Amino acid sequence: MSSPPLRPENMVHQTIAPSSTSASSASSKISPMTLTLLRLVSTALIVGTLVACSSPPPASPSRTPAIPAPFPSLPPGAVVLPGDTGPLPAPMAQPKSRWVPVRWAELPGFTEDALHEAWNAWIKSCERPAPPFTALCSDVRQLSIATAEEQRAWLIARLQPYRVEATDGNPDGLLTAYYEPMMDGARQPGNGFNVPIYRTPAGLGARKPWYTRQQIESMPEAQAALAGRAIAWLRDPVESMVLHIQGSGRLRITEADGSVSLVRVAYAGTNDQPYQSIGRWLLDQGYTRDATWPGIRAWLAANPQRTNELMWTNPRYVFFREEPLNPLDAGFGPRGAQGVPLT
Image 1 (cartoon, rainbow, N blue to C red):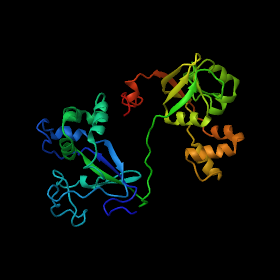
Image 2 (cartoon, rainbow, N blue to C red):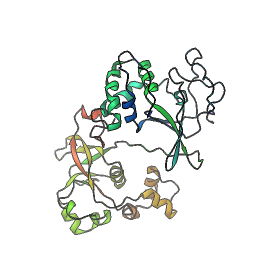
Image 3 (cartoon, rainbow, N blue to C red):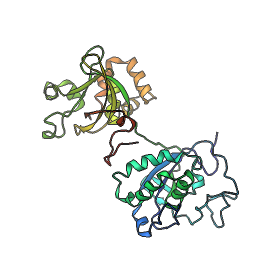
Image 4 (cartoon, rainbow, N blue to C red):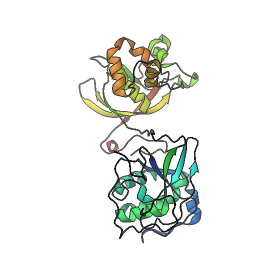
């Protein structure tokens, strides 16, 4: 299935706050924001989405008037949402992409999205907002009890969506994301649980870079520095690598007395060695054409004697700290760079 003319396949839409254009208040609950405050808001707000191969139902003509001429970037018959009729800013050139301003009506699913889900995440981020977003947080909090229509109108008034295009014209793109894996573990090694997850060693800061992954798993000096530092033990070296790459995860740990605890292991530091992708190594060696985690597992199942060889191609090693996970904490992700839980 091909994409509609305004929604190229595999494009990403992202919104940022306009740098100069003011707009009327979206709700009587919200006081108008000044032009000075709007100029502060210049970084990207991550409400972008991959463009699907199908488009949402066209908006009713009675609710979305036709774009007044001239808007040469849109084909005849295109529509805009109320409040989104001003002139578009110029495209922005990035090192590896071009950001092209678009109308909100071009953002797939925008008129049907459950905005309260994004609003909850935004309110959480406003506990410790990045400086460019501080000016928006007062409105964000007030609009937490607003209707979806009021929230949508506020987004249209305050933010500008962009379509991210590759500079070389390639329609294919890569969008990465974070997730918090859930894994089984044991407090003591044995019964198939033989892959340790370590706390930071006492002498980590005295030696930079610290031992490589291969040295950590094979050298007596490195092993001695980590003695007694294991948080838990996993079954699978691939699970351990996933945890190291993601930087945090949740463990269902079988304790020594047989009880089961649910804990979070959060990022605490690294050995300061460079990161190398084990999937990329398999591709470069011509060993596989599938570098996904299922593909990596399949290659290891066929070549179990080469597990260490593969894992040691990535010299970086991540250390963790254990955090309790009560029912309230379980509803949120680990703390990110802003110091608030990821949502």
